[in-house]
Image 1 (cartoon, one colour):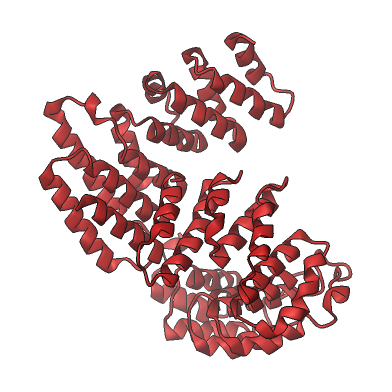
Image 2 (cartoon, helix red, strand yellow):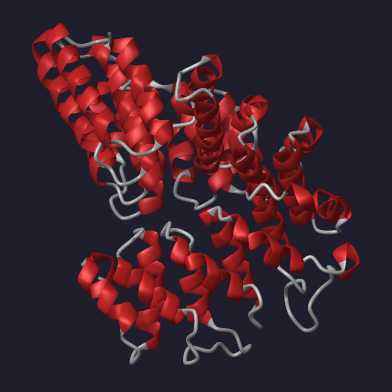
Length: 263
Length: 205
């Protein structure tokens, strides 16, 4: 069982280059178990330049997994290499890199992320012959919001009108983070009442990510899995705890009561 | 519609959506005659219908427990997970062993989570006084073990469970739970779990 790998086995598996599928799995494993070992970081950074593991559509599966893992390992050495990945030919490498740069929280990523929005909403169309748009807009806009890129507010605003709901939600989320204007968060709350489960899930996680306390009860009552509602409420609770210097105020207490009822 | 007609409707659904609706209607009757059919629904691999059946079975309550214990399907993993949720919701002490096993060993984190919560809200008045302390110690140890779970939500559930349990136990056991939670607080990394632990410590004080 691969899950039963020791740290040494996992590191050996990412360092070797004979078996591509084992290396691919090891990249995922190191992220999943948040292995912050220097050797793991070095090997993952190496994997971002892999040329061996190629998918039928010309993509780089190992690079995608390595980029994802590096977002979880909390190491600033990954920032510049991940910024380089934003110009990869592989859409999914760019998407993973944007998500990881968001998690690493380093503002150096802002200019390169911003470049992916070039052409604005008019350019945000389907990539020819692919199942996705030309850029990973959702991930890019979310990252810019989390990184506090207030200089991009005007650039992302038009994406509120995009045809894709998830891009609109990402934009609402980022604009709330960048402006603290509650009307954006309230629009996400309305999305909790939508018809499609997939979109309700997305709105739940967005509200959790922005830590919007007034959404607590609406999240608890949303028609979706308790597991996801708990994750969203945890996000809000943790934002509230940070604002209150970890004091248990009335809002935190109420959020915990909502969570208890979903266990 | 009579319960018999509702049972026939559940057994002959025209669509997945119709099934969920029929199960919800049957569950709302709270009629013990519906128990075997509602338990059967747990095996259908239809989450919407299972959620409706679980809440119906919890509403019916005590009468469900024996039937469910006798019909736990050791081979159908999905159905077992839903059954644990039913036991957790009813809080009947006859299900203690099932809940303990689920809390500490189940493969699915949502089942472990539901079981820890359920262990905190058992109806202790139904346990004879001579057995109560021993059973409570067993539950307490299971929840203390669940505090070491790798998933934050199970640790969170274990804390809620310990807080619930502490209302019904001796003052020595309550002191022990509080001390364990105080120690846990110094080791926990997740902010939300720490906050829930602080809240429980305050409640126990």
